[in-house]
Image (cartoon, rainbow, N blue to C red; front, side, top):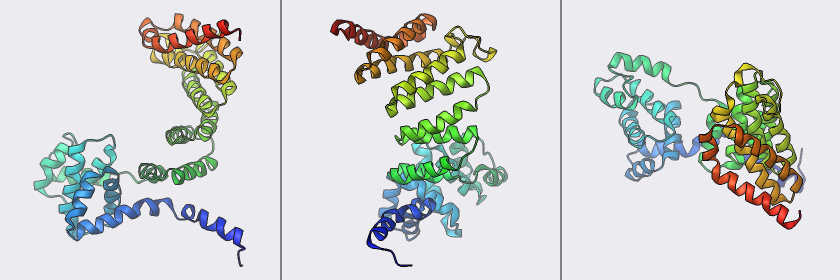
Length: 319
């Protein structure tokens, strides 16, 4: 079947999204791995200084193992061990790849990289066999995001969301990942479904204030207000009777986080020109500030002061 010009343009625009994301994000690592294997000194410097490229190299090495790779695997592990970044999965993967060779001389490095979990060669080989879990779709999405392929990561996340049923853990992961890349509308969609799956008052309160944050960032302030209403109901702040899971909620961080979202919504409503929502939300904020622990209220003091002055400005302007 021949495509007309408009269809051909659309196909070409969509082409990067037709190729499996795993293949796309592995390509830079595979190319760098081949350069490392060839002894390219420039590649060693580039990989040592670029943790994102190094992450791709490690995953490429995992799926293309060669007998002569041990020296460069040690090099990669030394880089990860020295940097100790938040991406500990790469350090764990590098350690597992080195440990799988089972050489006594690697034990000191492995012991350091695994914070003492490996103490001898036999243990190293056994640990390597169970240390690295199979990558999931989120592995490649996360790597795409780190590589700057934000739109491809976003499309992949939305496709996962479209195919996800009532799976709370998966919805939570999708919500957080979509929020991280800045797609608050899709994150709110995942979060809304997640909220309906919660059984306890604490779970409902925790997911409701997150939904409020996402709706506010999406720009739907009324929906954010409804989410906060659900959070208040969950903890009993609206004179409802919550279950035992939220006992002492006001003394814990949960109370501070719910209050914080009320104050943020108050300021957003004022900025949007919704005086009624701002006043209503600020009234709830004042009650919450009197209810939560003094330490929590103190931490929120700069934000609450801004909100109070902003609402006072409404009265001064006659709004």
